[in-house]
Each structure stands twice: as structure tokens, then as C-alpha cells.
Amino acid sequence: MSTRTLIRGGLVVTAADEVHADVLIDEGRVVALAAHGSDIAAGWTADRVIDATDRYVIPGGVDAHTHMELPFGGTFASDTFETGTRAAAWGGTTTIVDFAVQSVGHGLREGLDAWYAKADGNCAIDYGFHMIMSDVNESTLKEMDRLVQEGITSFKLFMAYPGVFYSDDGQILRAMQRGAADGGLIMMHAENGLAIDVLVEQALARGETDPRYHGEVRKALLEAEATHRAIQLARVAGAPLYVVHVSAQEAVAELAAARDMGLPVFGETCPQYLFLSTDNLAEPGFEGAKYVCSTPLRPKEHQAALWRGLRTNDLQVVSTDHCPFCFVGQKELGRDDFSKIPNGLPGVENRMDLLHQAVVDGHISRRRWIEIACATPARMFGLYPQKGTIAPGADADIVVYDPHATQVLSAETHHMNVDYSAYEGKTVTGQVETVLSRGDLVIDHRTYVGRAGHGSFVPRSTCQYLN
Image (cartoon, rainbow, N blue to C red; front, side, top):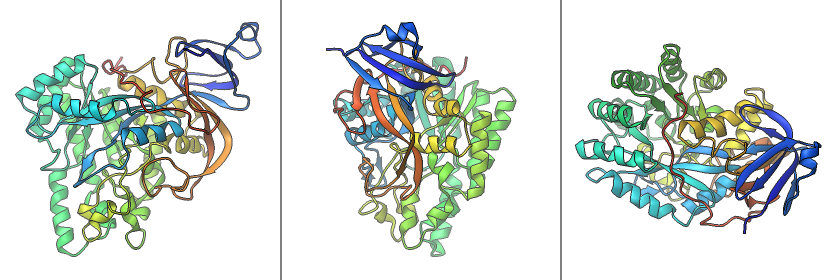
């Protein structure tokens, strides 16, 4: 039975507006908003009333870059769809877009079906899929058209990881041309993998095996070079381009230059690049392994360019690239060789809180927080206005957020299935209090009341950010 819910007395914050309003929910959707204290709002009745006095009422977060159960480096990401989506909900995220993986020599459909099976019946919140293309050929190019019709409207290619996910410039161009024709958005991991492999080999030959060398060989210039090359290939193909996990100021400059020319080029960064740095990779002992991800953490001075890019809209989205590996037994695989450390960080639970801290710190405004974490990812990946906003007709994916609470981020208290926190001991202001997914309570006053299987697969339309 559907429960009619009224959220009363909060400050509703969307990408477009901030207004003291009551929100009425029925049949899993937002029915109406009315000024708090108005005659209209006073006349509403509901089965459940949530008091949001002194709280923000915000859209559920949309994390457009997660990797649950991803096979990588001889192991698997430690969060399942069940544990990962539960942790996402604890952090105020109500939709993830994860990556289905095509294996070399196999079709896109085979990879996608495997990911449908992993997620089906296991998710606490709604989910969609992007498709990782590891083998671009005539057959898989045809499959792209069929997947777009099915609501899988974005395709990730890699300029990195030769022998695993790598595509050469010709394959990338063909996929971009297909995307330009069928509406599929190409997402790019932009690092010059062939050059990086040479630098890895040379570093190991010199006996440089510690985690910090992971950051030193994956040079910012090689991220910038690949970003530039991806932009030019997209121009040739007449296709839009979305560059994932931008970490270097030189790469931001390439995106900004392209956007200054009016090109449909978009960029995403992640909390780890905004809040962590090579100082973490250089932590003594083997502690730096906890921070090995690709693109790698950069020296602190890159952070200013990323924050500026978020303010000027040269970067449009903050996603997590959530890909956790436990320190014990997984990160340790590279104890004597940094190139064998599984690449990835946990973060799906921390994104909304860290970005609220950025509001407190003056890096971004409240509305920009919601824009980069909710509205734009929804628009970029064809989910808006079903997701990413609070408006009549939208799914009732809503977070009641306490902007005054303080919390200490820690592996002791987080809900991600991983044995460390990338932000251990960091104090942040702001905390999720209550979370609704399609009108159903998932988190109720800091208590998990959700269930595996509530989350549904959401087919996506093509990119809505181009208009």
C-alpha cells in the first residue's frame, strides 16, 4: 500500500531554488510543494508526517560513476550491489549508475546481462548502467544502437590499461561516430596508457615499488594529453564527450579551452581529488596503498583548479568512482609492486557530506552542491526530472539533511564493505537524517529501514545536457 507522506517545515534546496516549503508525496512521487504556513499546505493531510524544521530537504543524490563487484587486478571490488547501495543510501544517494563490463572477445549484451543479474533483487536504491566497451568492432558497434534503445545510453572507453580495457584511437573514433548517430554519450578514461606502462616498467626497474610511485608515473601531462586527444577525436566524429574522474589542472585547462570554443565537452571530478593528495599516497609504510586509484591523486595545488572548474561549470559533475578494495588481502597484493595494487577508493557514502563541507568552506554554493551532485548527473545521463530534483511528477527520492550536525568520517562507523576510510578522522559539518526512495523510507532518523530489492533498474534517455 502506498503511504501518503508530508515533509513539513524544511528549506527545500534544488539546483534552481531555495524555498521554505512543505512537500507532499503520494504513489512514490512528489505531488505538490507549497509555502510552509500557507493555507494550501495547512490543508494537506498524510499518513506520515516528517518534521524537517531547521533541516534542508534536498533531492536524493545521483552518483553516476560506481563500480560494485568490479573484477580488477585478480580480485573484485569489495562492495556488492546490496552493501554498496545500502551505503549509498546512508550517504544520501538514491540513484547510482554503475558500469557493466564487456570482456574482450564477448558481446556487449553478454556483459550487460551479467550485470543485470548481479544487481537484480539486491539494490536498496534505484540504479542504471553504463556500458564499458573493451572490444570495439563491427558487431559491438551495432550492439550500441540496441543498448541505447534499451536505456543504456552511455559507453565508457579507456585510453589506459593496455591489454585489459584499452581502445586505440581508431576504435575510439568509430565508437564516437556511432554515438553521434544513435545518441549514445561516450565517457572517456583519459590517460595515455601506453606511455604510462613504459614509465611503470622503468620505475620498477629502478626499485621504486612504493605506492607513491603510482602517482609519479601516471603523470598529469599524460592525463592532459589524452584529454586533448579525446576532445579532438570527438570533434572529428561530431560527438559529445564526457571525461571521467578529471584530477589534473592541465586536464581542466583542456576542457575549459574546448568549452570556450562551444564544444559539447563535459568533465567529472571526484571527492578524492578535491580533498586528498599525493601526501596521502606518500604515507609511510604501505598506508599509501589505500589511496591508489586512477587517475591518481595529485599534489595539493591541483585542487584549486578543480574547485574553480566546478564554480565556472568547466566541470559539471562530482561522482565518486566508488571502487573499494580492502587494505588487508586486496590492496596488499601490491606490497612489493605498486602496479599490482588494485586501483580504486571507497566513497559512495561520503560524497554528499564532503560536498556539503565544501559549501561550509565557501568553495561552492548550496544550489551548486545540489546541481553537481543531483541535477546535472541526472540531466547528463537521461534521468531528469524523474531524478535529481524536487518537483511535481518527480520520483520522491528525497533527503532530509541536518546542516548543523557534525560527524567524524571513519571505517568504524561507515556502512561500505571495506576495512578503511579514505577520509579517516575527518570532521565534517552536515549529516543525512532521513532518506526516501520513491516515497519509501530507506533511512529513518539515522536508522536503516530499507531492503534489498526495493531498488529498480531505471532505463535512461539520451543526454539531456546538450540542449
